Image 1 (tube, helix red, strand yellow):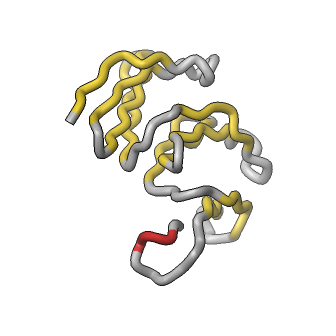
Image 2 (tube, rainbow, N blue to C red):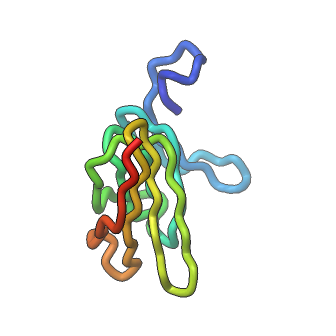
Amino acid sequence: MHTDIGCRTNINVLEIYDVNDVFISRRNLTKPIDLGLNGDYLIVCDDDVKIFDISDIENTTLVHSISRDAFDVIINNNNNNNTLILIGADGLYQYSLNPNNIQNTEELSTINI
């Protein structure tokens, strides 16, 4: 949830619930907009793109961030070729994702808008 969704709130949080809608955990963020799941990692478009280890869902950990202002995240897992596509106001950015070393995100290409 974030403040600019038209609900007249000042809430900027990531809340995690199980499939039965039972609350599990909450993390304060700056302006969460979009998210994607890649194995044990949750990728969130916030003030930066933040990558959380969610292997222990009750104790999520920020493990990496990418300095991009993005509003959309697309994860492509084709034949062990994991890529992350970020879309922001200034362009489209493609990164490699290494599930064995998630901090090793390498920018592959950029298309400026």
